[in-house]
Amino acid sequence: MEQVEPLPVSDWLKALPLAPKTKGHLRNAMHLLFQWARRWRMIERNPIELVRQSNRRLKTPRVLQPRDFKALLQELRDPYRTMVMVSACLGLRASEVMGLRWEDVHWDELTVTVRRSAVAGRLNETKTEASTKPLPLDPELATALLSWRRQSTYASDADFVFAGHSGKPLWHQMILKDYVQPAAARAGIGKVGWHTFRHSYRAWLKRLAAPTEIQKELMRHSNLKTTLEIYGIEPDVAPAHREANSGVVKVLLGKSSE
Image (cartoon, rainbow, N blue to C red; front, top):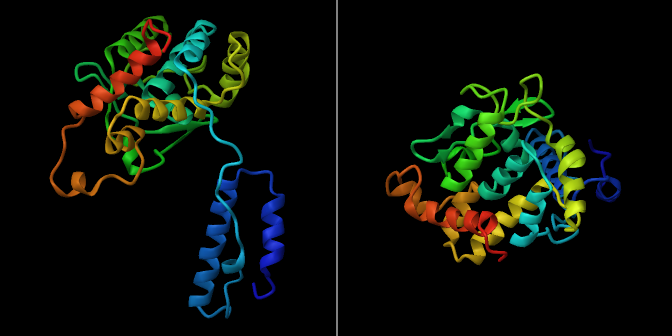
């Protein structure tokens, strides 16, 4: 450990074929390990303190226009069409879309609760505690989900909403490559990724003037407002959350092009 030097570590990070944010996480993990080594008096210094790694994105994330999103939907068939609708109209991560079970959809309350994620067939917990908070389900999106449930072979409460032939969750990387990106090419809207829909959801919340704290809670980020944590429990889905979400759904699924 005493032989580790800042410049070789910097060069190693720079050479990794990873996103800047991922490299930043690696640098921070190494920094923490060396800090503990200092506390245990295994080393005298932490060389990672002198390693600089920017978390800045290489390019600005793309945001779809509503007309582009609607053009994409026209090129997709189910279950991929409904998958994309759920992703864009709820701002879910791709792994969370694949991890949904029918029991997570509460039809009477018109809410959705994200309880797990699915990556390459493996089930995991949600990314943060904030990720498990109920989300508003707009009636138009609920109708689309019900329509898919009537077609699906796996439609019991314990089944995955987007199950493959084996009943297990589909792989979102394969869906993107084989169905969503070809559909985007046919629609003439350029390249898209699963996170394009999540970025677009947040952008449209902002454009529709949803309050900042409502945006953060609908995106289910971990930095919740202190007032909500201190002054009692809010309703599972407050009217302001439902209004903000429905505004986005109407923009993306409504008849107008903008």
